[in-house]
Amino acid sequence: MTGAQAIVECLSKQGVDTVFGYPGGTILPLYDALYGSPVRHVLTVHEQGAAHAADGYARASGRVGVCIATSGPGATNLVTGLAAAFMDSVPVVAITGQVQTNLIGRDAFQEIDITGITMPITKHNFLVRDISKLPETLRRAFNIAQSGRPGPVLVDIPRDIQTNKHDFTDIDAEYPRQMLVRQAPDLPALITKAAAAISAAQRPVIIAGGGCINANAGQELIRFSEQCGLPVVTTLMGIGAMPGNHPNLLGMTGLHGLKQANHAVHAADVLIVTGSRFNDRVTGDRARYADGKIIIHIDIDPAEVHKNVDAAVPLVGEMNNILAELTQTVRPGDLSAWWETIRECQAVYNTPADGDEFSAPWVMSELNRQLNGKEVIYVTDVGQHQMWAAQKLAVNSPRGFLTSGGLGAMGFGLPAALGAQLSRPDKRVVHIVGDGALKMTGCELYTVSAEGLPIISIVINNNSLGMVRQLQHCFFNKRYSASLLPVPMDFTAFASAFGIPATVTNSPDEFSQAFAAAWQRPGPSMIIANIATDDLVSPMIAPGGAMDSYVDVE
Image (cartoon, rainbow, N blue to C red; front, top):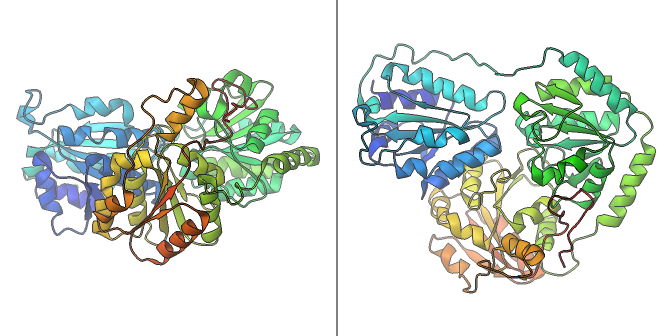
């Protein structure tokens, strides 16, 4: 068979049912092989959309997402999507076409060194020069993407490798599933040490990061928290690791975290950190963050331990196993005084959402009301709307809240939403986006319409680049340079260009009616929520400040 046919065969054997891509000259042999194959190809409007869609597919399903692009600009257009997947530890395999092998290095038409470009933003990448190695390379790519700490892998395949024929005797071979986990040899002793520290703690707090979701460790986290009576906060990427309505959950911590969550972290004497890399948005001033605390860091990646915050007890290994061991071993003391302090903070800070004022927090609360008990996946873009959603939405299942955390890539939301919807047709995707971010990848509405996906897009429209404007408001003396969008965009006309119905809302009643109607509609819908430009996200920690130092955003 040809190399291109072998690629399709290998994808099928890896359980791939859907790929996202955009054709071009050097990848056309693969597209020809896809024609009539059992692998579904979803044509996006742009290669960046294909990468984000594969990312959203992977985040929502836990399986590897696959994207395809041609050489040159097709490959370079994947870069932002691969970087977003890399920063958030998402398993993606990107397949790119390359000029034929005898032209590599000669500046041929649409030649680019994509393996060199993506080396810092992929877990690994390959340039296939030997057709006989093609199946093994693809098997390795999938294994690397999903083993240990997940991440994107790129496979660059020259055109002649795709068109040449070869007797692939190993096409059915199985690549050994190496988990690539470097478990510390003294892990049992360290677990005992961690359990002793937690048992002696007076103010312990669990921080659930994105690694907890990647490890499918949600049930172990809940069991650990409940049996040991421990409060839980999440990072942005950890939202959904514990149900949003769980009494032990205090909410998101960090730069725009809830005050009761930040207060608990600031006052804690022991932090049990599960799958978080202590991003600067989580810690603020790292020295003050860790001061006076015993840090117990659970992670599958040894490179993350001690990188940003020194851990007194590093626990490197499989999170499910470590949490199970801690649950059996920890014997906590009386934490009633600690819980009393936490409940007092919640009573002070956990205020309802803005009464009848039409605002983004109100919209999130209305979504909680209308979607209570329904199977839903929230996908956000990046900006103020992202933080309002993270603060207010009740996310009750892992993989129920998808967002670009580490890279913060505007334009992530819509293509990731379509990938998520295709991977989980049993759930409804609600896509939340700002008016600025929608302009970046909004043409993927064409793909949504072409595939007939029942995605509900909610545009939080404040006629500005809201988060940029907020930073200028707080730190640049209200000099709104290049952040206001004075020409209003007709989002209803934009959506209708793709055959998608859209409704403009300016009040709570209008939004409630519009969303209820959209939920009943079988296809895609858009709702534009016009809010005040002056609305700001609160709370907000001062840059480089401690977890209890807040910026006055009024």
